Length: 189
Image 1: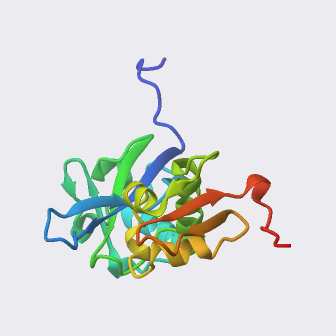
Image 2 (image 1 turned 135 degrees about the horizontal axis):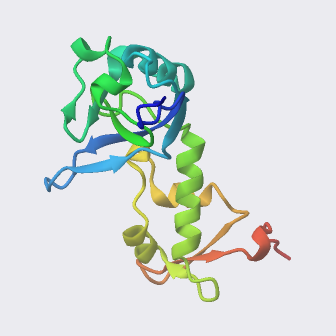
């Protein structure tokens, strides 16, 4: 005879989301920045939290000492890392927040991921027929904090196969960015 309650699942999926706090340059309010895509890990619910953190370390290459985990209820202190995921409060499809102990001491994704996301945002915000002014794109497409030392115009010029820059020498603010059709390199005659 069964007691009527189903047995716990053999495995659960835990969703890890990486965030960091980005300090505003202009003295404004700091804001949170999601560092990339969610990491979905299938594990046993009886796994200790330390072993779970070691799995994240293995997948992402982040040192344990640089990880700060939290749930909605608060931070998961290292004193609780020897408890099982269930005891810590992590269940199937539960979300765990991961932050660096020091802002930007690690990246969640490779730098090429951030480059690709920036290119996609530029293409999305650039008028496909008329192009868009550089000023407009600069307002609409903020660079990820991991690329804060990069100038947007230098980044755009890295991709001549995607973007064409039109610069007027008669005005200070007349730089227009066009998307090359079918991403062909421009040719000159």
